[in-house]
Amino acid sequence: MAKTEILSKIGVGSGLDTSALIEALVEADTVAQKENLDKLEENAKNKISAFSVLKSNLKDFKDIVSQIQSQQQYGFVGQSSDATVATLTASGSKAGSTINSSLTVTTLATSHSLTGPSYNSPTATVGARTLTINFGTWSADPTSGGGQSFTSNGQDQIQITTSSSSTLVDLRDAINSAATDSDNDGEKDVNASIIFDGTNYMLMLKSESGASNEMKISDNHASPTYAYDATDGAQLTQRVAGIDAAFTVDGISMTRSSNSFDDLFDGFTLDLKKTSSSAIRISSEVDLDSVKTLVEGYVGTYNEVMQSLTIMGQNDMVEDENDGALIGDSTLREVKAELREMSSTAIGGYEGGPYYLSFLGVSTQRDGSLNFDPKRLETQFKAKPETVRAFFTNNYATSNSNITIKAFDFVNTKPGSYAFTTDGSTHSIGGVSATKSGDVYSVASGNPQGLSIEVTNGSGVTSGTIYYGKSFLNLLTDKLDNYLKFNSIIDTRMNNLNDTIRTVSEKRIALESRIEKLTQRYATQYSAMESTVAQFQETGNMLTSMLESKD
Image (cartoon, rainbow, N blue to C red):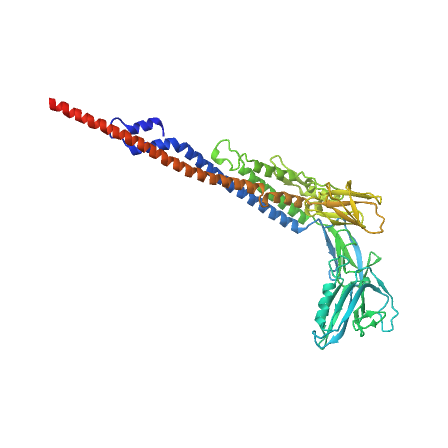
């Protein structure tokens, strides 16, 4: 409150409003501090609210990016003239060619299937015995007379030992527990089950499909009822022989151990369903409609998020009330810069790369928003179909089928194309020295840190290229995660602002204490003043009375 206002409240002479005067003096002394604390608290709350909206926007953006990524659209689709015979599906790994071929399916791949002996209960005991199961190819179904040859396929054998109290159920479970996936195809080499034929229970063993995955079983029991070999004969009953799928593509005869395989056409999986007496047509064609829809979705979402961030930091030259809550904020500027940078980020680790978002027909406008040109996408895709895959999915590939990626580090291995070389004594991956253990080569430093590859023993490979690429969407997700993770820079800013609000609360308490002390001090001072004035008034009254009595 201004000094002149205080004087006007004091008046002249007696009749002073002491309470109002003290209140005015205290307010004049503390009003600026009150206003500063109110403004500081309001700004902090507004910024916390804005950062919450910012984080929510980024979370929504990530969710939409994840939805786009899950669509796995790459620009090619497979077709079959008869889906009951076979289907062709673009797997997205390297779907980059137009296919138009005839297919005739002669036989389907089957699993080697054995059963026996029979029991009246699944809890019947099977006796103490040791079974050894090997995998490979039989020249023919072994008989009691023996004489058939067996050639191992190199897969790990398994061994199961039972006791005199072991039941048929125990034997089944022991086989399944011992079974391994020695060829790393996602399926165990053998599967055991118990079947009921309406009268008896029996063990059923099934290997993986294909002629080279048949089983040879030895049984060390005096009565080797679980044997299936040339020595003890076919004590188990062969229900189905292991057979390879046989088919012709454009007149070329082929076989596979499985009915589903992805090594016929790059980037496509062929699934054989049944045999056919006549040829069917399998084909692929470019279908960018889904890709266009997804890219449009990304561009639209990006523009909406950036517009929201811009509003948060806007500076209205006319009305301060229209300024954004995060005007001039460094964190907001950083987030916007990181998102803009993605539009020009090189996507490495793909054959023929690096690739850029612009290859998909996405360009940055003068105002910072993105624009999408579907025609440019189509032109670029026909020239470099790998571009679309670099947008959607990560890449783990090598230039040589005898080189496989064994491991990499999500944090330390940088996306890129790394040349592998070895002269037998010195080895390098991406120009960084590699250590060798058996057939595995590993790197512990540099950009390929954490990368390990395996070179097939005896392949004679001395060089090759390893491709490790993170897709555009994955790179974007990594950036978003930096701001969404626990204790991110946004969390830190919000925590600091909450600390500011707590500090304001503490300062308000201190201010209230100061106001109370000021009030008491002024009250004491004005009480003394009023006492003095009262004394003066009393003396004056007495003198006046004396003078009046003399008259």
